[in-house]
Image (spheres, rainbow, N blue to C red):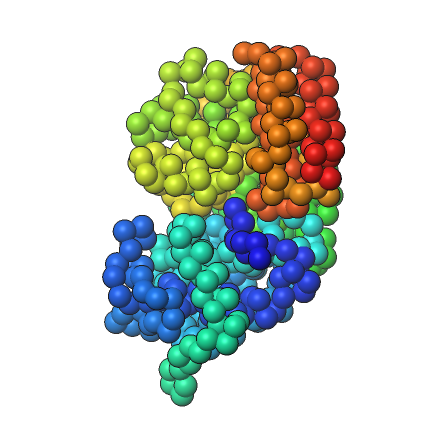
Length: 469
């Protein structure tokens, strides 16, 4: 059996891969693993290790924050998660439809012992997922996810676990104050207001549909909204950060200064300038890095990015005298690097941007607000600010219906990559990797010439299909 946890929680088609039974069982297992008492973890403050069975959190009744995005399947999965936690003796605060970073923030702000978010982020509506946060709103390291899996499988195989009864069962409370608390936090950390800016917000019919417009409006911006009418079925459907056409058109139509687009759970943000040109995560990082350095907030003069970042970003940071630390793909690895070395800013080309002084995970609404605040503070257009870096041609092809587990072990693929790297030389690069959240292999090629990049990428995509199909 493969590992349940991917790069960002457990995901799958709701009610097929991700069932109510699995959601309930994982929640029970997570409660037991995260609430065990013997021995303190060196990784997470307040976490105590043990054998993964039947622990309680020392000194008080454990509390969990549970939120979800608007997917229809989130309704029954939320019920299963809440039932599992309460059955394990955890008191549950249901915050309803809120972004993933809101659940992380509230987990820390409310002193909860764990947080649970139900979302499949940018994936299509039929998918869903479960993410767990430890005390303080921190994502779990692989070690804890592995222990949750082992505990889940042990319980599923009939191993008994201590079930509280009577007053020992968890209580469930609706916590409506979460929305206002989170929005107030977002607006409160901005260095300046957004008065005078006209901004289009695409909420992807997702978790940011209420939060993002409210936060931008409170910060003083004039806002136009699209993708802010979720019905449980339309999340990410032709809108949001993976489909920017509507945002581009709306920005130009309304003469807006810029537009921001979120994904389904609003942990990422992409933008468009006043002419409708895309501003990706690398460009956003570049703009924010320069602003934070100017304000003295870019600790150790370093920004963290992944190996998927455009070569143009690396060259821009070198030219501006800013150090670049690179990690494996996945915002969790960016975050681990930031926490390990005390860096303040990091992110991904996809728009996951982490401002560690204000958030424990990527926060799309915060990112958009910070970007807009930089435009307002400088009086420069977003296009002008983003011009600090030139994106080299980069071609990304997603190859579906292949065995992604054999990417690293296929001799044919290794040979194909070596040949491509020799052709590109020092002016380009190649990256093949299995997606951590979807059943596909990503082929990325960069080159100084767009036609060459596309030709090499298509040849490698054919090689992936042939070798792994």
